[in-house]
Each structure stands twice: as C-alpha cells, then as structure tokens.
Length: 189
Image (cartoon, rainbow, N blue to C red; front, top):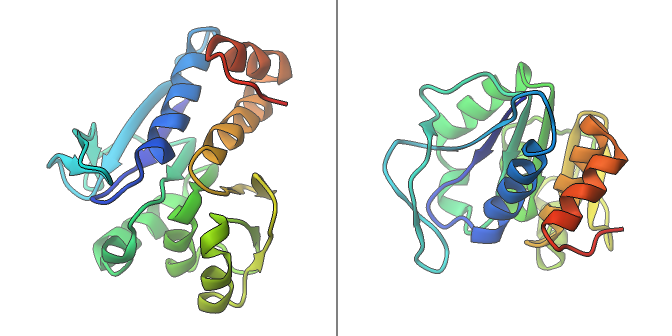
C-alpha cells in the first residue's frame, strides 16, 4: 500500500505527522508492505507552521502511484493559488483509489474541483468560509471526520489521527486499528 501525504510551506505539523504516525505504526503489524511518504511542491525542505523544517520524500514531479493520498491543512492560501499543485492534485486524484484531507487541506481538493457535491468537514473555524467559498459542498459541522464514497475529510489538527485510524480500520480491519491506537497510546473509539 502506497500512502502519500502532501505538505507545503505553512503546513500544520500534526496535520501530516499524525496520519504519518498512524500509518507507519499500522505497518508494523501487517504482512503487506505499507509505504508512507511526504510529497511537496518541490524537493526543497518545507517550512511548517511554527518553524519546523521537513524534507519531503518526493516532489509533485515524481513519486509512486498512491492507494491513498492525504492533503494536510495549514496556512494554505499560497499553495491554493499554485496552478501546478492544483493540476498535479487533479491528475493524481484521478488514479488514486482513496483521497483524504486533514483540516483545511479540503480547500485544495475543492479548488481543484475534485469533491463537488460531497459531504465534507474542516476545522471549526473554517467551516463557514468553506461553505461560502464552495457552495456546492455539503459542509458538516461537529464531526471529527466525514466519509463520502472515496473521499474522507477531517476536522482540525488532531482529528486527522481519528480519520487515519478509521482508514486503517477500513483497509485492514477494526482489530488492527485498535492495536495501532493502543500502540500509539491514543484513546480512540
């Protein structure tokens, strides 16, 4: 299983590191290979919100095919206007079995025109802006995550961990998701 997590300058650290930890922990308990990688607009280090610098594994210009693509949230305004990123996202999502977003990562999927008509969520502070900016979405309040066919979105920051555990459950089964949460010492369910 190939899992890609898209990051960019201004990304919220837990938005990508939470899901990264969930899937890399789950990988310890399965027989099939599970590869988790970070993808960025270029190979340059990404400056996260709060100043942490992270080196991506791949750029949008060369990476494996993904079974799951997650877009992390954060200060996304600059990347939201990057036409190369939006074109890459639209192309990559068409041949990716399942896509997901954490927090404001949903704005990139919406801007790329990939989730029209879907039920989605985001950070509580961005719900109204999401609904106003993309009135064709069904924006859900008071949900940690929302699954709509092959797209899953989560609320803010730590909700990405809950969403990722649910995706582990969907792919590998409930017992593995519980084992993963326990290994992480995370109170889930």
